Image (cartoon, rainbow, N blue to C red):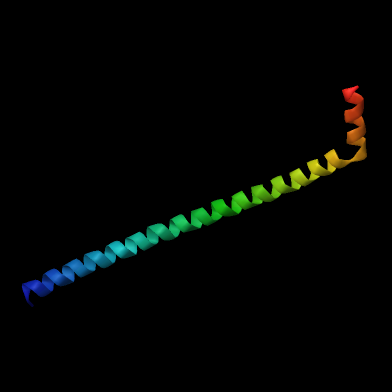
Length: 72
């Protein structure tokens, strides 16, 4: 076996190992990012529901009447 062949194979194996290592690390990060995104979307959905309820309360006639009374 030639010295250059040995050096080439060694460099190739090291580069492949680094690529595999990087892939495994990033795969784990993507999963945690997906979970964080899912949690954030759930929170946004809950907040939208609460805002809709608040808008409904504010647009009711009773609220408007109470505001007028309080302003007097």
